[in-house]
Length: 287
Image: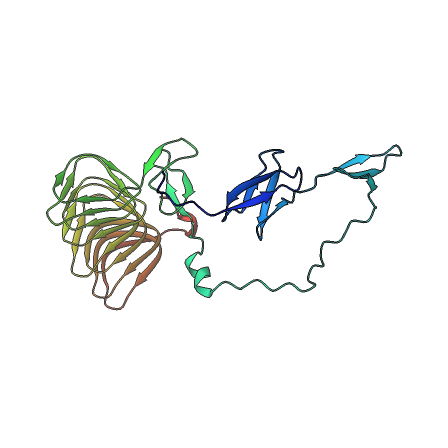
């Protein structure tokens, strides 16, 4: 437009061909419109932009490597490499990790579970949601279950199961890791962990567990034999218990029936009315 002010321009002369051209005053680099050379602008003057030199190693007639510079003669390469720089003789020692890092990131121990199909024992990583037996390829879930209402469906898991006060489990077999009974249980049980009775109960099915716990003030009657690895009795129990490990009767506990165990520990004040059979130490079985 006619009223637009003219921008400030400078005149640059190409050092290659001598061609002059106008460029804005704030130009940093440009290209010659005549010879297409790349130019840099410093203090209002055009100079040729510095270019990197490519060095190519080739072999001469005798088989020795030589340097070929673009635009220069060949130069032999000496056998000794040019030192870039000296490395420090003493390197700084790496920082020691804090003590809490060793504790926080310590590896967790593997968990050994029992296959739901063949009973094979195999290790798994803690925190997994499911696994598969390497022997029979049986699927195993680690989902925890909470029974709050009457349930008649089959529960097979290697997680934990809790039967609440208003809950009832009856019908098919119950397979889990830890089982806490606060409600009604009317089904056979196979748990690899603790079987904990927290209320009075009358069990009419066989029980297999890793640890049988009956706390003080709880009365439990077993109409079928109970097979367990260890037992800790603090309340009143009636029935037949077979322990491949140790059976412990706490103070003021009462047991009526037959107990078979490899080790028997009767605390002062414990009452035992019935028969006792001691099993050999090698009778420990895998549940």
